[in-house]
Every structure is written in C-alpha cells, then in structure tokens.
Image (cartoon, rainbow, N blue to C red; front, top):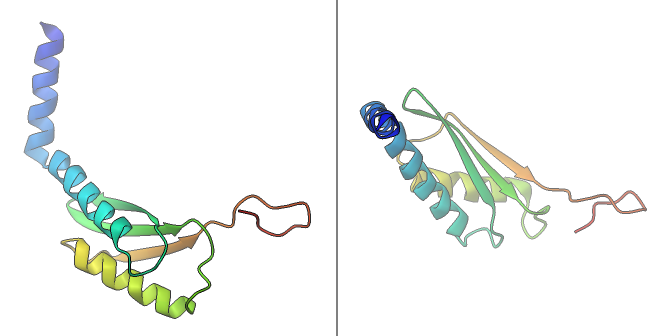
Length: 109
C-alpha cells in the first residue's frame, strides 16, 4: 500500500512540474533530428533542459564527416535542430567520434 501511495505521489509531482512531458517531448524531438537524412549520417542527439528552457542540444556523429565542409555540416545541423525542437536552444554542440586509435596512432572505425 505504501508503494502505491509513493508511486501516486511521484507521478503527481512529475506531472505538476511538467518534467515528464518535457522528457518525452524532448526525446521525440531528438529522434526526429536523428532521423533527418539531410546530413547523410545518423547522429546521436542529446539535450539538456533547465527550468523549462532548452539549454543545449548535442549532436554526435559516429565518425568525422568528410563529404561536406564543417561549416556546411554545422548549418545543416542547426537547421535540423531548430526545425524539430519547439524551442531554439541556447547552444548546439556538434561532435564527432574519433573511434579507438589503431596501432599507427590514427583513428579507427
């Protein structure tokens, strides 16, 4: 009985502060950016909300993107984030995974 009451209190608290909807909506927006085919590679997208404000969106590509200049990739990512998220974030972080170094010191797959 105590567990049920605690669960109800937790759900009521999360609903009241709108954290649950922020998390679910933010996840939908992140998945939409991940599914956007405009870059040619599927990134991982994370986000950070603080007091109802979208602080940062991080777009992490699995490898260095060499098909376009970095500035062009950054602009495509900015447009995708701004079109899929309801709020414009304070900052967008663009990242590339270098992978595990190989024996010759270069980044591997």
